Image (cartoon, helix red, strand yellow):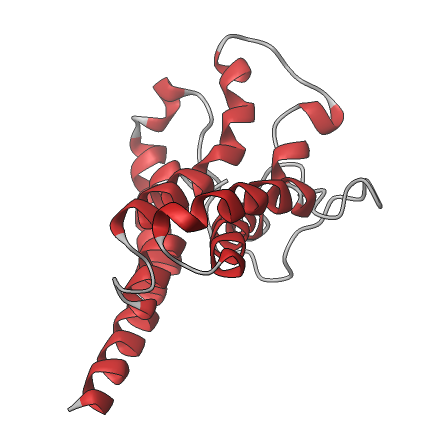
Length: 176
């Protein structure tokens, strides 16, 4: 899995591309939280519990169904954000589903059951450039953790920020 720091790259880049009128700060903040929420299933792992199947790490919270449920929260928050309801749904769905999609591009783990409950088959992307992050905190703050962060900078942050900033620049050059 990428680190929680890198999971927020998708909402940050999308907000840059869309602009602050379409993605107000509170919407960006909730989108960033939605992008990391799927990894809350790893908290019990920190205390030695090895959850199995769909209730362990990379299980239910890493499915499109879970992202759709988060999207429903976006429907409810849309009025507060002053955006159309469909935009609220799409924002939280996209931010949440970006998490398992990034996890599918890592070099390790058990794969992602993205389409559960329709199938429990776990998937990986055919392109897997992201070094898998250590789950335990003591291993994260090590040489391996530094290697993971460098991998994420090159394979996630730089490309996404380049795309987000390019779209931002294109939007602003057309207005002039």
